[in-house]
Image (cartoon, rainbow, N blue to C red; front, side, top):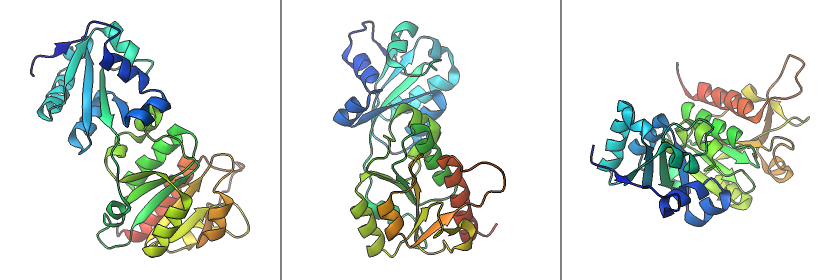
Length: 274
């Protein structure tokens, strides 16, 4: 590992920037976000995402795995700065900081990257329509990655997928598949029409059919809605089909992250020979 430049002042510009990036306004202004923790940064270092700089606490440098990650970052010409444990806490967001923090650029994807990522030209797209909880958003991204989705589309009104909790909840899946953020609903509908992608909207109404009773083998975009209000009425009215998950206990509904995993698994099951 190359020698690290040391930051000793709490007024250092990089330390202050890292702390500010926990606030949505500054993430948007700078097109940057923060990833914390050794495992997440291992995945980030291996992904083709832009890297800005990293902060390493004195304590974490005693961890051989952390040192190896820092070497990976240095190989990618990402500056790594050493700070005291106390200064590190000023930049960290977690209650129990792991001692390694990476400031990254927000990668911008295109519709073609999502549509072309499916080898059989039948994309499977998870769509977030007004999902507000960053933990739910990250969980859906993780499920989409695990179940072979071509990508994720976040419509206007969805939470910031680069929020700390969303990044952590994705468990690194954020770096594994193309994600479109801040997509206007008309742009989404037009892209689906132009590329023969059917739209399925998760819903609980008399027009919905059981989620396993539809065919997801052709191009499919499955829309998951706001935790309180569900999928927007406009998308419900324009979707090719509404689907619901039958339940047999006393619960009235499922968390949107759980619902997404169930429906996406069914789509994956239909497309895959186990």
